[in-house]
Image (cartoon, rainbow, N blue to C red):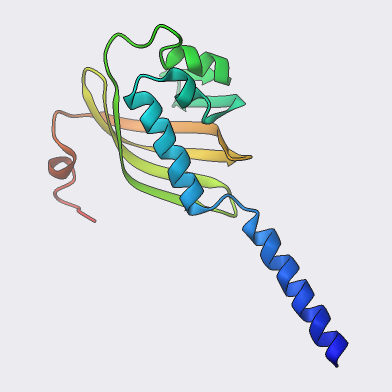
Length: 150
């Protein structure tokens, strides 16, 4: 009986450790904030480093598509930087650890304000797939969402 109890505890501990190997909510939030910080500081390398080497970044169906970290580095401003400042603010971030899929609502300003959503796939702690949808609007986030706040 004692051996059975010890084996049960060991199996449970092993399963708990396996579940803990998933990328966690806090890690997802940190990754997405690191990306926003890179954009907000004009640091293309910091932003691009949040993506896998073979990442795919799109705005469906074919408004924009970038493949690979090197291409994203150039898109984010490269060594020269962007002509004007970018400002990314996250409003909600949600992460499904088992599927390794996360989402976020955002406001992005780069010469024009947009509010949108992104869904991302995480692989080995980095963004492997990014798909975004957005609306251009001069409204601040609070006014943009005033009829459905949460």
